[in-house]
Length: 117
Length: 119
Image (cartoon, rainbow over all chains, first blue to last red; front, side):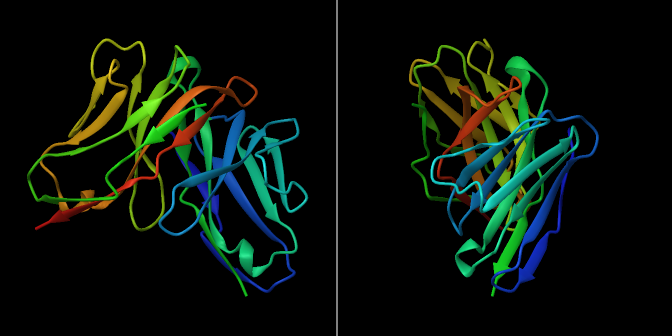
């Protein structure tokens, strides 16, 4: 299967600082990557869709200036949480689309646990 | 709009027994895909199995099989010969035609079922 990495796996930061999370497809090129947020014991909530070479598409209610997404290459997308606050503490997980058409499957990274103090 | 319903918040199964995790869906799209993911306590989402809406046969991957009943709009996951390592959250997801650009499509997730395997 396709492998997606995510870094860092865990980060603790002070309120007001910015945090960058990287999502990489290791053995395939991903034109599209997705960023999700997951609260404890809840399902995944799609935050935004990241397309290589174009602006990300954000879901309703997600602040684009707060969560900056850059898809600089076919193997790397980054999510930057700007001026993080305690309410941004969460589990963030990315996925990359692998395959085409009906066979397209999202493969997920291992996730990043963010704790803002 | 697409919707995935997983009615079992938690399930218990004896080791080596089979277990069925329920998933029903609602969509008006004629073409769609159904997925099951496993999320252990570590947090990673592991892809298990995929079923296309036009697939004639039920999907199987090792100990995992998908009981696809299109008329009932259900896509239940069957895990045979449960192992302790199967204890995890299981999410059913559907891919429809919510276009995300560059040919990729969004997934809609259910709320998940927590499976606990008892030794």
